[in-house]
Length: 149
Image (tube, rainbow, N blue to C red; front, side, top):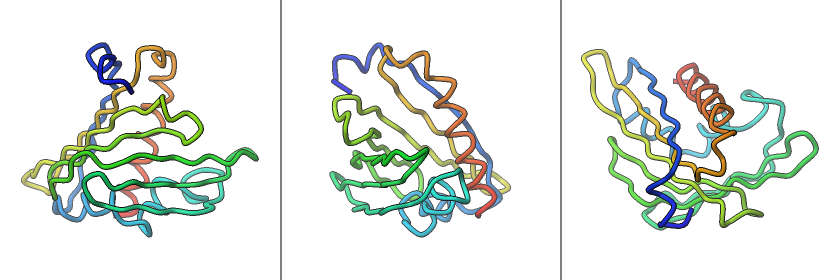
């Protein structure tokens, strides 16, 4: 997403509580084995994982390739901020639409019972009609993450 459109972006926001230490929840976002169980794959939705790669460093990139509904989709992005165990910021997009990247911010705060994760996904205003679908997708994945952990 171009920097000048960020001020007018649509924001999808969700919160999920976990009865776990923030480190355990944070690490699930940067571990391919865990991502393949809660973000992508047949345990999450009707799809096949083709390949998963990530470089969990500032400026590092990720690529999660799946086949869904007969279509190969490569979810790509790069890490902007990594502050274990409290904050993770990354771009999110599909490789054949690189100009359509959005920004996802994960904030994890300690609670008396474990932690609370807040996800904020900033979308370009032209994708407003997909904001409900985006929220539902993240909600489904966060529920899978909760089940996994």
